[in-house]
Image 1 (cartoon, rainbow, N blue to C red):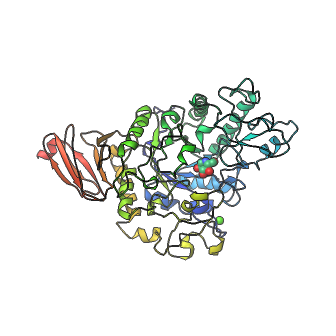
Image 2: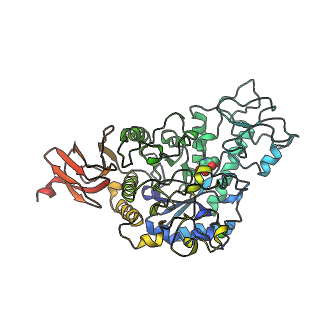
Image 3: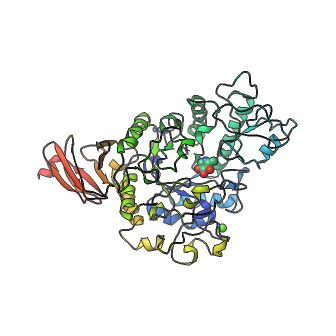
Length: 546
Ligand code: NOJ
Ligand code: CA
């Protein structure tokens, strides 16, 4: 056991999310694969990322892009073999990188043999592996969703997301005694579900995986409005990690760090710029639309229109930070496969300001593949594998100016999804040579983060100027003596602010410093041009006097 409540590698971890089907195709069938991820490991490393989150790569009918698993122990043939995945672990480790997989713990595909058995009329050992009511005329309690009339079994099953994603049975926090089909969490059948999930994790951790991102982590125990039983479940899973795999990590898709971290996760995402309505599916309190700092919901803070309110984000963020500091990490991802691309509707300057913010905040940074070049959302696509409006955020990675932008040698008609058809689509190759490109900005920001302890994942954070409906936003990382000061002004107008700094106010530019700075004994006044950011190192006062 180490002295941290988490493995020490998380202190400087930076993750890169690989959506395998859209990343790099190696065998020319038009679909990205595991050999493709291996081929691009050096590129991922070159960004300053030292960890990967791989979306589900297991056998699946792919009705929800692999979040509908039919065999947890087998890599989907379209991505390669179990041996390819083991090789990915090896190749990554040889480069000092970690690989975390995606654990879809809450549900399976209806095609999974467990569900097929469970849906049969006659009792069998899988009958209670999923949550079924005792007749098709018995409805599930409010707040849960059900599918009726699936097959011969006389009952409705609870589905977690789409209709083909039946909920595995982890029991009810407070089963209704009048509804005996609602099993308690400690029922042997529900215990068996937990044990099976542990075995799935052990199986891949033993092959070299470094942890799991857990899909819909808050969804497991049913009828658990305050999530007490769900947290207890994850705390038990965490014990397995601390005991058997102390270097491995559990990452939640919960978007409620104040619950997820005390519940046992090492990291939780605050998913902060979703499509309208989507966030609420995962949030503890569905009515809170608190993360409007980015553009697609309108009125966001990171928008040249400058109509946003940083406090909407910040008050919520600080609440979570206070309750989790020192125990685990909050992640503010650049995006993911479910949400709008960061670059969407955003000018290159706006994108730069957003990136500067994301990579100077505390927590473990996550880059969704392509966001480092400002890859764009593709409008108007027909839904692919349950993507619906998420589909346009899942188009293949554009590497260079060869056919299919280097993603695949297949006929363009055979690609998993079309490439961004715009002639000015960003590519890695073109941005490599441009010192001002988003790609090189990401590299510089991540290098700065590595080189300055004050920008570390666990280093302190203190807002210095964060007024409701005002710009800019200024914050300090590390200590006032030798910390790093960051100011972001996403608005398309010059903004000035004055604030006090406890000790020293001698500023040394670290990356960009477009601002005019005036300092007196106790105050700093910063004037930032439209759509700009600055990052400065704080030097102790005596140095300034010399
Ligand atoms: C969250 C995943 O990120 C998303 O892609 C998936 O559709 C749902 N969970 C259901 O598993
Ligand atoms: Ca392929």
